[in-house]
Image (cartoon, rainbow over the protein chains, first blue to last red):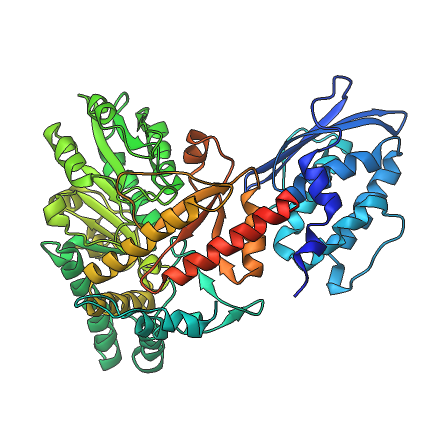
Length: 150
Length: 423
């Protein structure tokens, strides 16, 4: 059994208590909402994308500690990244929390996002950790409709 | 806490009380550990565990009686038909319905409500008519009515709920008007634990000439239901919350109402004769049982009713009332806990939040302690909206739960509180 502290690391508890980049974004030119119909969690990601670069990013919504902290750290990690870097980071993050074929890996250069590696031991919580990322992906793709984790 | 302690904490039982130690031994699933801790199953409002008698009865059917019912002249079919119809008799007695043809087997409470909304509502409702429900409904007693109201241009009216989680009776009386055609109410709220005064509410509706459907999903497992005494027009419940198999439910309906309703689905068993020009429908209850039903499930439900009868539903109810009262009191004293719903009469469950810690985080922490609770909106989003919370934790109890499990839950919550408070 993995220790709960592996899941609820101090960094995660801190970002849940004080989410960074939280609120609307006046200059946003893309937004997308992620919904987890199972628990009712809702996260909207606002992006200001210029010349293929994430110039600014903020998020709003309600959810559990894992989904809020994940959204918060995501926004910190993506500022001033290119669209391609953002997509690549999404894929590495997804591989870290939901290892394909059960092969665990710790992708390089995850920075603070590495704190979420413990989520892979709690399969029911993977959707919480990836909710904001799915909304990000939809916003980057310019999708209007809310994306669902289901 | 361990299983041994569970047994030793039991005190001398007064007459007519449940022997919970023995009851627990009837449920194989309870004798296991989860994450190294004894399983504490407090998600009974979602589904109850199955006693050995039910599991064995279903296996026995498949091993020795499996065949289609109401069809064959062979011995197996006759045996299976007898067992299937035996459940109808048992359910009729259990609900004290007047006649067996008033007991219709369906897939669950949801299907029973859909059947009434579609067949009764569909035939009766006209533009401008009104259907009255309450603000504490499960989605399955909202959406079927919404669908039929939209189709017919009828209006859905909602009785408000007060801050305790009780129905506001004055508002209910105000809503019963000349255009009201149907009232649909939960016997017991699945999100708040409120026991509604349905007998009085049914009498009030009848005073206005309006029939009443009772969503009894959370009622039947926890209290004696006498449909003739209640005088309800329809009563719906699910087998799986009553220790029976999933995929089976019961719709009780007064024969006079069921008679005048059109069939729900077309198919085998619901007809007397079919030609390409015309079909003559079968008599009650078969008119509403199209296609091969969940035979094993219905037979399993019969075993579940027999099991409850042996324990005595009154003994089960008084045991559960004691545990749930203890839970409400014990949890209210845990730092950070706020009960959602403090109704005048409570049954079977306690819903609560822990400070601003999200219910899902609590669910994960409790799971690590071997404790199974439900976290989320409980398919009752309007209730969450009413009480201003995104989700709650719900601990729900059955005949096999004991006070020591409430203590384990309280300890788990204190652990969650410490983790999130960083102390």
